[in-house]
Length: 113
Image 1: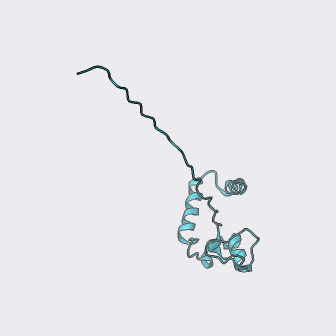
Image 2: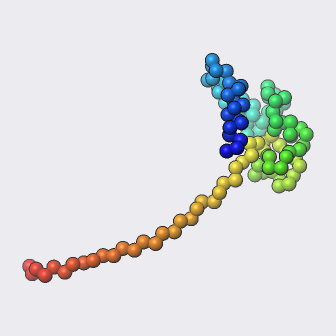
Image 3: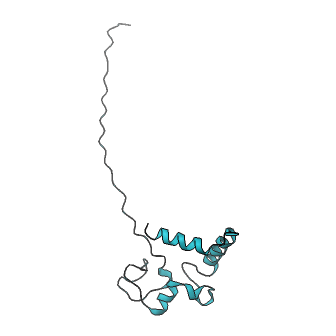
């Protein structure tokens, strides 16, 4: 939640207000063709010099709590572009138990058939 506001502010500052759809389409195409989650093509990325994940990979460093995707060795100094965005740790589901009692009252009908 604390990262959400700065990300939106940054995105709004970069977006062309006249053609927001073009900006969104360009980001989607970049993610679908160049910056793919499993096999990013950093060498041909047009925004590589602005990419924080790429810079951290090249430096081989990361601050604690950044990167660390499921496939990375914990405590490893090696940071890969594929470690970003960091995967959120999901909370286990809450287990609820309920007790239910049903009482059935049968009335005896005194009328004879």
